[in-house]
Image (cartoon, rainbow, N blue to C red; front, side, top):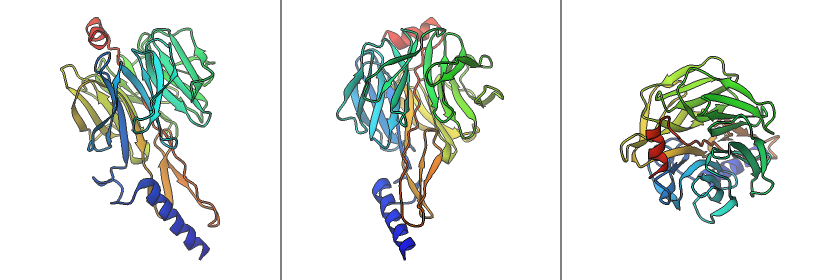
Length: 346
């Protein structure tokens, strides 16, 4: 009887958190939200969101100056994002309300990532050639890497492994270091044109990145070995995010012509590529906020790489949910003067 009561309570908790409705993956319950930044000039940028299948598109934050990296704190119901033209890291409620500046005067910003366990936000600053971090409220800003950077773009964290990874378009490398900035090393130095977006699957031992110059999506082991080309023929792919629990990756392409931007997705091996959204103005970074599902009385939520985590109960006495963040942020500073002019001078 006690076990049955806990199962009933767990089912009720799942309904409260995930919402009652059709089974996971149907059009009424697409399994979460995707958030992305829309560059759109120096004052008209936006943060937008939609269901994972592309339905229900809506603006969340508007009037931003060159928004770039974005990350979602699902448990805290907060958005964190870098506004490059304003040189500021901002935070808002997940619906876009209560926007606030966290750190200002940072230079032109790019990637952004969260370490929620330690209460930290990390970012890259291209114009000051730094990787920095601060507390989630913006206090205690620290310089982590200040030498050897050319054009640092997206940053991704392997918190369990104690590492941060980033793409450097200026040196055409993917690099990593300890979370405190020590022990910088090259991970991937060849086999791509310009690496931009970056996402990690620590449980699978893989990292995924977009190649803006060659129009590819690639992956390799976390030590840089075994480089694979997964998807080819893309139009300037930029930010990328993983939903490892469902075996999917989603990415943005900003295209060349006006309103040629897209969000696409595919299986993690690169198969079954499909358009999710088309006709976007200038998408840059993407983050996934994945919702829970109930399977056999166990609540499953994704961790920071999109892997499902089980909120188990012990002897029918303790039920808990673990929430998570998938974050991907990156900004395209495309190789060549024409692309740079397009991105910066509008």
